[in-house]
Image (cartoon, rainbow over all chains, first blue to last red; front, side):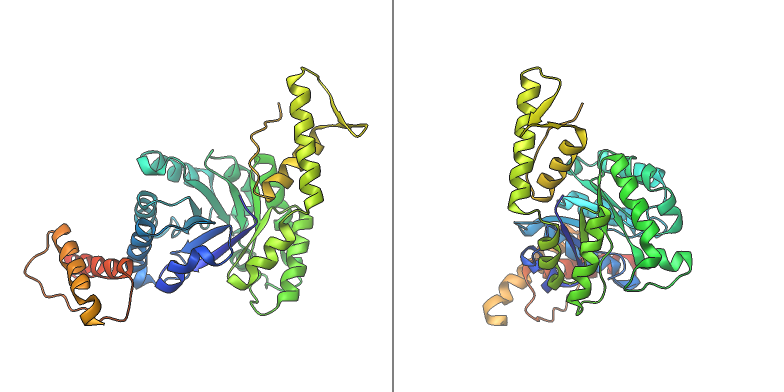
Length: 286
Length: 54
C-alpha cells in the first residue's frame, strides 16, 4: 500500500491541487473533520471537479468520507467514487456490516471496481471488532488506527508517550495481520516535533505497523525513511521470493537458501519488505 | 485578470448553468485567481444551494 498517508483538507483548493507533490504514498482528501458542517457540499463538489480534471501522479488518492451516522456519507461516497478515486477511508468503523454496506454500493458503481477501503478504527467498539472489520471485504487494503477519538472514547488523555494506546495499537496490528491486510498507525499530531515523530514512528514500526498517517507534508519524508526497507533487506527479500518460486516450479516441497530452510514466516516477512518498498509480488502462500 | 480570463470564466458559468438546466438567473463571480476546477465547483454548489432554497 505504501508507507505514508497524508491528510489534505478537502475544502482547500491550493492543497487539493498540489496534493500529488507533497511526498505521500496515499493522499487522503478529508471531507470529515476538516470541513465545517455547512461547507460539506462545497468541499464534495471541489473534490469531484479536482478528481475529474487533475492527474495525481506518484501517489494514490483516497477520500475520507463522512461517518455513516451523518447525512453526508452516501453523497460523499457516490460522488467521489464516480469521479475517479483509488480508495476510501471509512471513519468511525465499528461493525463489519457497515463495510459490507459500503462495498455493496461500490459494487453497483461501474467506475468503482478497483476502489480499495481503509476502515478508520477509532473507538473502543471498533478496536474490539477490528478483525471482523478487517476481514469483512476483499476491498480492504488496511486498517487505520485513529488514536485521538479512541482515547476520548475510553476516557483517557492522549499523550506523547502513548502508553494509553499501546494495547489498542497491538490489537489493531494483530487484527489486521490475521485478516491479511495492512496496519496503518495514527498520525503524530505535533507538527513541529520532528524528534518526537521519529521516535513514535520507530515504535509503531517495531509494533508491526506497515505505515503511518500524517497531518503535515513535513512528516511524509521522515515516515517514509523509517518504514522504507534498506537496500539489503529488499535484495534479501527478492532472493527469498525467487528461491521459493523456483522450488515451487520444480515441485519441491521445501525451499532453502544459503543453507537455511525458507519457511512460511520468512516468506511472509519477505513479502512485507517488498510491499513496503512498493514492489508488487503476487505470490500466494498455499 | 478579467481581460485575460473573463471570457473563459463566463463560459464555464454558462456551461454549468446549461448542464443544470438553469436559465434566467444572475450569477455574480468574484475572481480571486481560482483554477477552472475550483470555479466549476463553486458554481455547481451555488446552483445546487439555489435549487435547495439555501
